[in-house]
Amino acid sequence: MKVDWSTFYQRIIEATGETIYMVTFTLIFGAIFGIMVGLSLFVTRQNNILENKWIFGILNFIINIIRPIPFIVFLVFLMPVTRTVMGTTIGTEAAIFPMAIMATFSVARIVEQNLMSIDPGVIEASKAMGASPLQIVFTVLIPEALGPLVLGLTFVSISLIDFSAVAGYVGGGGLGQVAITYGYQRFDTSVMIVTVVILIILVQIAQWIGNTIAKKLMRR
Amino acid sequence: MIEFLDVSKTFKVAKREVHAVKNVSLTVNKGDIFGVIGFSGAGKSTLLRLVNLLEVPTSGMVKINDTDLASLSAKDLRQLRRKIGMIFQNFNLFSSRTVAGNVAYPLKLEGVPKAEIERRTAELLEFVGLSDKAKNFPEQLSGGQKQRVGIARALATNPEILICDEATSALDPETTADILKLLKRVNDELGITVLLITHEMHVITTICNRVAVMENGEVIELGEVLDVFTKPQHPTTQRFIESVNKDLPSAELLKEWHDAGDKHIYQVTFTGGATNQPVLSQVTQKYDVHFNIVYGSVREIQGHLLGNLVLSFKGDQDKVAKAIQELQAIVDIKEVIVDES
Ligand SMILES: Nc1ncnc2c1ncn2[C@@H]1O[C@H](COP(=O)(O)OP(=O)(O)OP(=O)(O)O)[C@@H](O)[C@H]1O
Ligand SMILES: [Mg+2]
Image (cartoon, rainbow over all chains, first blue to last red):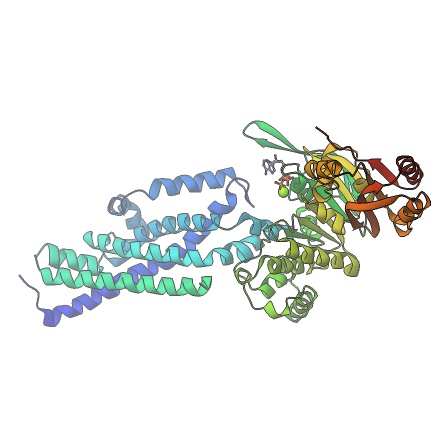
């Protein structure tokens, strides 16, 4: 059974909107909390400005546990929690919750790695000029790591587009669900092709935006 | 101004103890350009970092203007650090900030009003001769220019002390000379006490008035640069001095001269006053002896001239001996032994 494109295009537009919504929202959430977790991870590391074995150990442990879980497993695994927090386990809203959590931990690790690439001498210089730990975070760590950080966020946003398609599998909405319902289960190749093309375009746009901003920030 | 009282710093690395600084006592006076010299791993950087408590001493006491650093609260320590400028071998500039932004940084930390920051930044860039680079980013500058920015940034908060960790070691000789001149101006014109560490003796002889030589965490020699330079006690100090003062020609060259007929080769060293008198020509004329300068140098340390000449005397053997005897009473002269094998 083939779809009727004269009306189906509206469904595609709607689904594209859902995908963009899911990705944007989880990216914002993931960026805010991920940067916070990543910074905490970095500053509490051994010999760093707010060294704290316990906080570092706990955060590091959680990230190491969660990050390697395949997203589709994580999604299902988290369903009871999703139901409690979001009130439902199907639809776009329900997909956002596990995506945001996964995004947070991915961003956290990327932020930590970007911060580790800052020359420790620069942090030391700031310390020698009388900066407090909080001043170091806001006047050295964030500005010095901002360029690579944007590239990191771009990378995460692209995997979020991927996640959003997976979420479609369990009724999360978006292009993923359209592709699975019409393209895969009803063997309509045209739907498959259109969704794939749109996903590719979205990834390209995300990459382009990220590259442009990063280039501005890094002046290269 | 800066006092180290029996200070030691021990690092624990994988159960092993590294004694980076051992029982160091020394005083840096107001107005000094104090140099610490030593080979790699001697503990110089660690010693320097004790001054602003980037390293905490394991034992002993570091005092600045009679305040024991250990007694300071975290907040007071940050306050104190603003009065101690620091510059680094690798400059450690903020790559995300412009030249002006780097210089303004310590003022921003202090919450200085924007107009005042701009005025002060312009003034500092003028002082280090980089006014035209204000809007550039550090990666667009040469090493010497970067270090100028580092110096301007370190001076922003009007510190009383400037500490320099191998400030010229990443620079070529000409740029090094420029930066040393700038440091001298910082000391002369702004009255800032400078504590610097280096592994290059010529840095010490060019600008320092006092010097400490470090080895294996210990200060092995300490004093006025001129004294240490002319009368080094420790073999390590002698090695550093030889590095800038090649005072004899090579053995091959000496032998060549000797074989060619120069039988009376002497080395004369003199400091200060004697240099101003025509001692050599007076004495040699008196005994009708001639001399030929075959090798030599004169250098200036702390406003004193330091001469080193290798002379070949010609003339009647007895007369040469008499002339030498008379010279010995006035200058430092000794025969250069030529290896005849
Ligand atoms: N944070 C640290 N942890 C462990 N060991 C350290 C630390 N800092 C310095 N050391 C050790 O202390 C000793 C002295 O180091 P320091 O950096 O003070 O030497 P230096 O004289 O500045 O040498 P260089 O000329 O190479 O800079 C070295 O053996 C070094 O390995
Ligand atoms: Mg060092």
